[in-house]
Length: 231
Image (cartoon, rainbow, N blue to C red; front, top):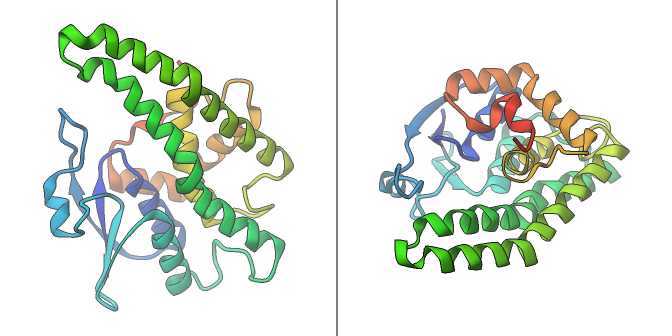
């Protein structure tokens, strides 16, 4: 049996979605973020030494696995039976592998920096907040925001060429890419003047498996239609 160690408002939501798309049975172990730090609770370290999410355990083979791309490849290879991945030795498969690893390797770092530097002024001691604000503004204006825009425009161009990231068919690469696009829609206006990004988010949010994952996983801030704008 597969167990998803599910942290609220995290990448583990897409693991639930992937399992629903594959129609696999699974259990959920719920974890809540620390309300002050927004970090995962230390209890996750009992499952994986880094205490991060997503993490799955699979009693079939005594597997404990973290890292988004690794989890997708494991589940697709073991349980997919050809679903949610293009045929090997095709151009679509090469694109599939690229987007599967691009999501965490390239897309998420600037979005994470935007989140951290956006929080910086509030986290600084009161006397230092004006300085923290200037540092935050300078870092975002000079480096982070241009990088985020570069990636968002890249997504728009790719999705203007085909409906899904790897080609004409929906794959697990689209599930992996959902989190950067949802996060960018919430934090950086990814859907502003990017109709293909907006259409992608609307399509994934309307998938029955996505909705079933929400019902099982609980509240997820990036799922609402209101999060597909920069408001």
